[in-house]
Length: 154
View 1 (cartoon, rainbow, N blue to C red):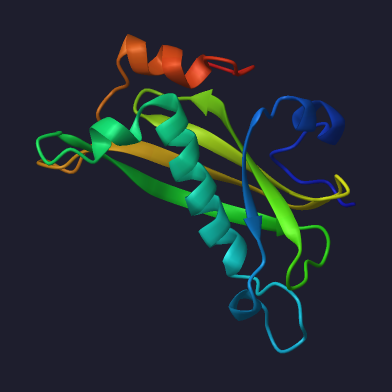
View 2: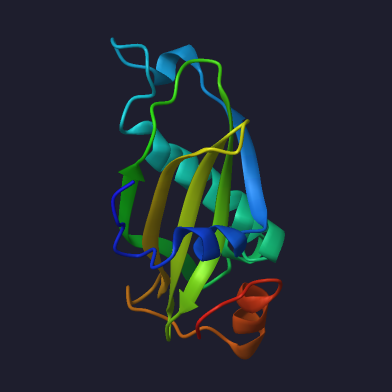
């Protein structure tokens, strides 16, 4: 496995994950070679990220029509470590790796049923004002929620 720039030590990095979302690879998510299409992990990241933010209590506020802020993905990347095939069960883990003023660096890890890591990812998400389109700083309560049960670099 080659070095991934956002993972200094794979074993240590892997230990920090707690939250995961389970999914099964659908036939429509595979390509002509029979393995998971390279665009699909980004959809898995989105699904797992939304569930993570529901679990943390953020989504319930963000989706209210009267709420002034929305989450926006600023960048997203995926590193593929193993092939994944139709009908495999995966767990996509999510953690808040570091918190900025109005952003959070989210890390992802896809694992097969046997515990093998098949892909990893990271991305920056910004809490943004719907009105002015600029970042809105996290409140102390939000920062606590992001850090709760997480080993995090603030």
